[in-house]
Image (cartoon, rainbow, N blue to C red; front, side, top):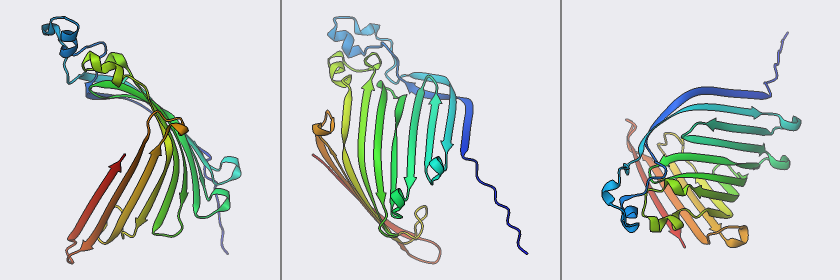
Length: 246
């Protein structure tokens, strides 16, 4: 006799926490640089701001929630959030493996808002979204087709640069366009490879026709291979990366 007891996994999963974070180099607001004071005819000796920023301390609240088996199918919807004075974020992701019953296709759509102060020269926030189709024709090869949108805003009151540069750096940047990535991976262990070959080629194209404010084409190719030298576990690894942007 065999007795089988099955318990269905919880469809909802919650993660939450509270703490604090500390960082150096937090940008100061309304703090012009010494060069800006000279341009304005003011005494540069009155510049009292530290170009390296200041120490920032902030409470932090995080809350993540995910829903599996959405609609009775193998689909997952997740939300990741965090709030503090140094960083605020809210990112939602919807994942559909085996898209329309195609075993080699996965579909993912994600987007959200991120605002952080991790650069000493400015505060930045961004709204982004992406749609990904992942194809795995075989074990070694993966193809990723993407459409990405990103809008970045820089707080002009946080710039630690010359005043004449503020109009340029404070302009919102919007980048949007399609991309494709090919990954060929024959490594025996991706985390600690001792043999095999890894090749990735990524192409991204931004154009005004896709609601982008920038026009450029970027290609990034990375190749690595690994060879075991002896039984002691010594490995010869070589990596080459080439990028072209027009």
